[in-house]
Image (cartoon, rainbow, N blue to C red; front, side, top):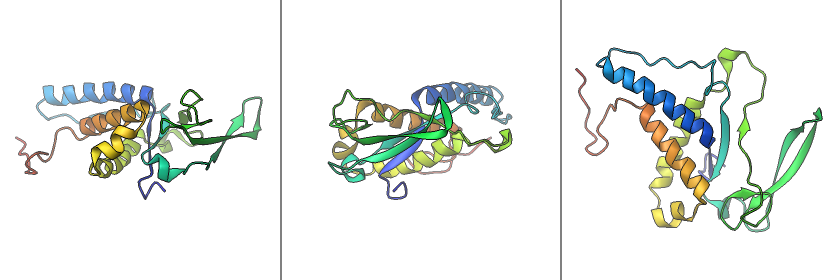
Length: 185
């Protein structure tokens, strides 16, 4: 369903804000040194190593039509060999929640919990760039019909994801407005 553009996986708001801060600092250093600098991200440290992720439902009524639910399982904190299941549905505000009411708990952010060597952790930058590709397609749809109907949290995550992707593409290789190559000195 991710391939169909019903949802995207991006980072949580906190992770996105932390990543924006890190990337902005690296971009400032790049600019200060006139482009003679390779950005150096510490993937074994936060916010990369402890990133949390969110699922953003782009087309709520198509993802889970009224009356449909999706089961999500998490490890039981008191006994990690057991899973606890919860049912989620599309609430009246278009968010994935435990109930239809807009005040019921949202599907929360989740960490990547599989044990791996530190050099094989999930890379949040790749998650952001993948999400940004899907969000560009989403933005090409009639804006009022789709973006405006999403809950405020999803809109905020979309905006932060696109902002971070723009920072990651620093410096721009092509001028977005003219689609012409930018010449670097």
